Length: 342
Image (cartoon, rainbow, N blue to C red):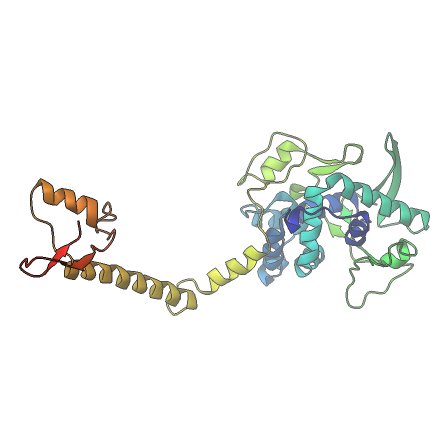
């Protein structure tokens, strides 16, 4: 079993999910889906931090990323530069969360609800001007739902897990903590400015907590995702063909760095390899010409050629099968004193 397929314990899941479990539901779904495409996360973060892109808002932003080969969850998060930056900077965490969501989706959703219940029982998860907290009762028990206070604006919370969840219950697995310079917590919470959402790339998915999946609006998904695979199912599924690991980031950076550079290390190595191969081929051909005479013409000679000296020709050149063995004649006075072993 590879590291990416290794299942995590509840302790490890709580540790990973602590800094995002109290995000608004729609934001949380996109973070979890996007974490399964870590290279897209890095590329989108680099794109949005470029000065000409950082100023884009609303429909202009949606139009600018329309042709990008990113999953719709990545495009949705472009509206939240601080979230993308955190996921990109903490890439090891992002990949672990993505792997857990792929391998243990049910457990991930259950532990999110467990963390929310801990914050609720500690008296630290309440409705306010940034969010609306409600409970739904189902066959699997109470579900805590977190929605934005107003549908057009979303606030990204930053909180101290050691405060909002109460005393942490796994001392050997302390929770991850997201924070920013200058953040001043009030009762364990900090709220930045609200984000005016772009309807063209938002609101196409929502949690189905009771069935442990993410519901997708098929038509809206396909409009956002028009340059990639189209879907017919309203249940989110990961696109394994598009998944790239963080190692692909370094490979892409090296390829871009040395693209068109004939003096690069890679180019020199490839050129040297070609020269060595050419020298070996030439040496074999010269050796064959110097040490082997073509057998006599006729059927007998042709038979000996095929049987004893050469393999089937490859790429237009004969390849030596084995050197004929030469031994000194043990008797007689044949002219030349040597014979080829039959």
